[in-house]
Amino acid sequence: MPTLFTKIINNEIPSYKIVEDANYYAFLDINPNAAGHTLCIPKKEEDKLFNLDKEMYAGLMEFSRKVAIALEKAVPCKRVGMAVVGLEVPHVHVHLIPINEMSEMTFQKKIQMSSEEFEALATQIQSYL
Image 1 (tube, one colour):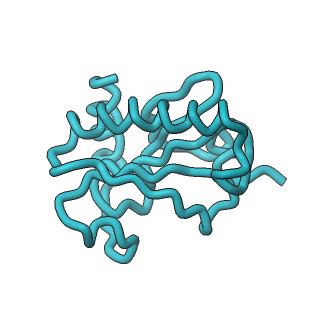
Image 2 (image 1 turned 90 degrees about the horizontal axis):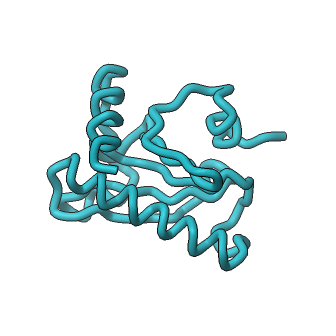
């Protein structure tokens, strides 16, 4: 059965897409720790990060780096934090989170955003890619 993220990739579930290429897809997290919280995923379903082959792993990190650089330009922050937890959805995903303090990386504090805010932010991040 396809994962939630595969359904997003296949446009069966809508997302606030940032960018995609042949192998990877980036979109805004709809339950964000901070404005700009982005998920980068491989299009190939894999449950665990270290089960990716070397090329797919390196490609995901480079894709995430490109997105993080654009994200930091679009969203004022001290830095973009990165986490790979992967317990919520059994599909590898890299969290990129604009942060100003460590508490924003705990996944305990969430913010609310409107559809319009998500759309505007996705467009703003895309402008730096």
